[in-house]
Image 1 (cartoon, rainbow, N blue to C red):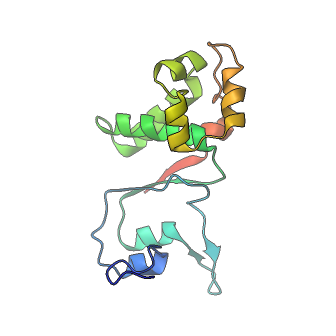
Image 2: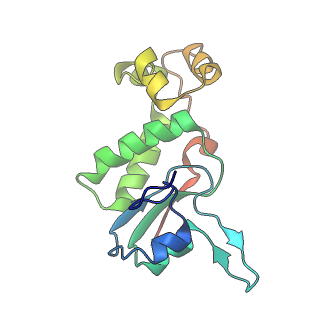
Length: 154
C-alpha cells in the first residue's frame, strides 16, 4: 500500500524532476546500465542520467554495461575511501586502479572473502569459488570488464 509521504517506494525519473531536490554534488548509481536510458519518441534519451542532469547534478558515477556485483562492491568501497581525500574523478580512477591490481590475498586481508560479508553483498557462490581457487597473488578483477564499465559524467 502506498505511503502518504513516500508513495510506493519506487522513485521514478519523472518524480525526481519534480521533487524539489537541490543540485547534488555527486550522484552514485552503481547498478547495471545506470548511464543508459530509453529512446523517447522525440529522439531524446530518458533515464536517470537525464533526470539528474536536469536537477543540476555536478558529477554522476554510473555504469555503462552489466557490471559484476562482487567487483562492483569492492570498487565502490575503494571509491568512497578515496573520495575522502580526492575529487570524484580522481577517486574513481584510484578505485579502478585498486580493483584491477587487488590480489586474492589482498581481498582476504581486507575481509572481502568472509562468509558474512559475502552474504550481505549477495555475491554468488560460483563467483567466490572461482576467486578462492586462484593463487593468492592472482588478480581476479584485472580484466577491464570488472572495472572499466564505470564512468563519471559531469
